[in-house]
Image (cartoon, rainbow, N blue to C red; front, side):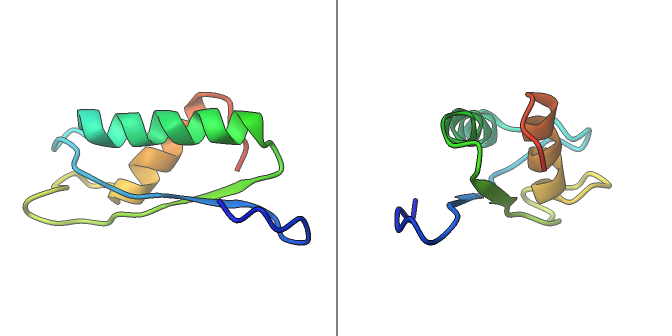
Length: 79
């Protein structure tokens, strides 16, 4: 986290894998859960989730970063 008070904080949530149905892997879910904790503790922070499509990490119809963002928002974090 960047802690300079003149800047907003930005949390970058790195992607991992998910199932064809869009279920996050354990690693991806732990990263998203940590982001929820950080965002809850610092409500003025913003977040970006990374990840797109790929044969080995996301064969669903939704970009991986969007799946992670949906997971975070479903836990009460505002976009």
